[in-house]
Length: 55
Image 1: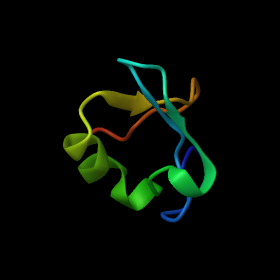
Image 2 (image 1 turned 90 degrees about the vertical axis):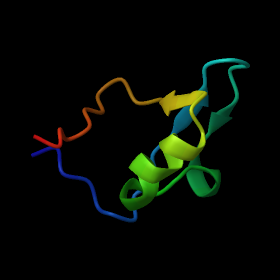
Image 3 (image 1 turned 90 degrees about the horizontal axis):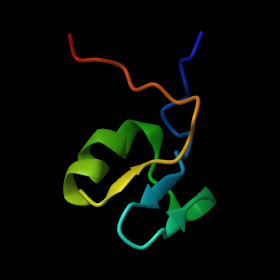
Image 4 (image 1 turned 180 degrees about the horizontal axis):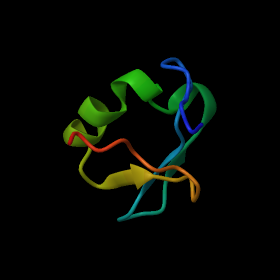
């Protein structure tokens, strides 16, 4: 299924200036929700990535 390892780094992109963070610069899957809360101008930069819903 679409489960990713908690330590998988998830590429993100800044919607304001187009900056992409990938590899070692990208947040880990397990930290992604909190990281995105702290960086609201970023979104996941993976077309196939579907975050798990809390419900």
